[in-house]
Image: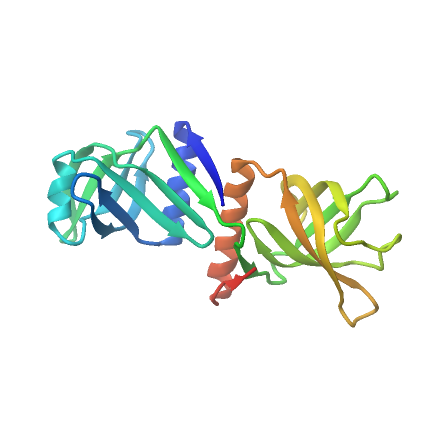
Length: 237
């Protein structure tokens, strides 16, 4: 497990937007009572640096939150667990009969990334590729991504690599593209190699290295985008 601290309004907002996009429930834990409640974070107000959540279930949790009881909020995304302290409730209301609370965003949050993350299969219209740069190769190695996770990807080379790929081979630069648009640039290592059976091309498993929290945020959003598009369960990496 790797833990990361996130600070700053912009980073906190990105983290919350990731939770909103996932449509995953949040769990609210009140420290004094050790009770757990469920809710949903569904919108942000950047002008007020606040977020909107549904009323808590069971219902008395909403009253505890409005009373300012110390609580923490958790969300278990696929491969990533995020948590932060509950902020003050600024106001409450209802829309179409559904109650909501507006809550101040925290100044810091944490997230934990599993070593065994989840991956989503790509599809041809997204055209995800990687360019791999090595000190031992005259030209970058190009590969087409087959599936992607927040920690790495499975890809197929565009031609037979020369010299041949080796397990644990390091690339000082791994540039991920969506179409012609660069997504992230990090380092990578070959974790495994398998022949594809077509034209003797190589299928390789890459582990991204030297990732920053910003890289992780971009990759997580891309994985969720893939998963939502193909509408099939994520596979364990």
